[in-house]
Length: 231
Image (cartoon, rainbow, N blue to C red):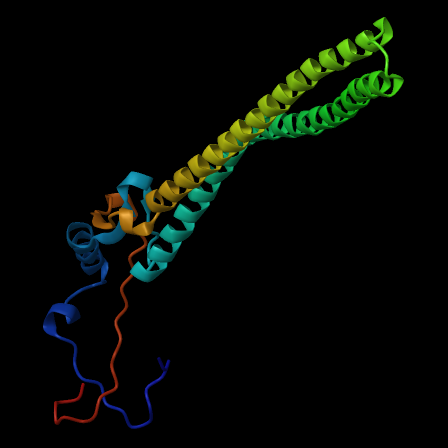
């Protein structure tokens, strides 16, 4: 406002209640009492999160801060879930890798022993056939060795099947673990959705000590001439 009145301005007289005052201290005290008894600071809060709005913060800004807070808490919980599952996942993956190596090894052993058996047994039969003589002790020994190898091959094939079953079981366990993590992550996303939380309004009453440094000033407002008597 201007510090000086325009040239030619007139001053309207003060109301009698003001002109009789020596100062404005009594009015300042009355205004302080009014503020203490009637004014309230309205804020927003989400009680479940112990989150409150700041003085002057609009509902929209508070909603944004609520969403940010929920997102940060959700991410923290997801990190805990991943860390808790990482050990079990690593253990299953290591067991799966070892089981797959055993399958490859067992298959290689079966292939090698199958070839040895065919050669041993086939050589004995062919030797007896080409010799056109009674089966010798050597021929019988070779045939017996071939028959024993047949039993070993069967055992090796059983080992392969067991190893393959173990691989399937470990893969299934990993699938179950992944589905469990996904289900928990989905549940967390729903839990930390802003729609799940109620925003309520509450008011804070000032303390006497909150109302301080109240200063009043007397100002004249510049208005058009209304025919009132000038001071």
